[in-house]
Image (cartoon, rainbow, N blue to C red; front, side, top):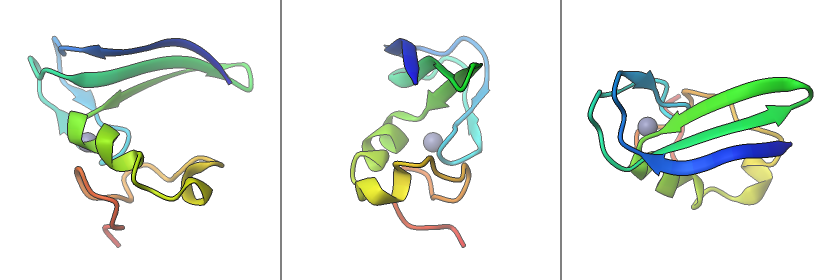
Length: 81
Ligand SMILES: [Zn+2]
């Protein structure tokens, strides 16, 4: 993976949170925005601030191969089921 951008932004339009798979409102502050290249593909991610904090609490083994988007609760580390 080649990280191109990894920064905290304020959104201008609605984006989908990669963790929770639901909307991040326009004008939301503290959103983690990442752009990277993985296996030759450009990838974009937006994270709610609390979701970005949540992923740091997940055991590394669970996310090292990537995680399934939308399987976690907002700001939480429990599966939605
Ligand atoms: Zn989120």
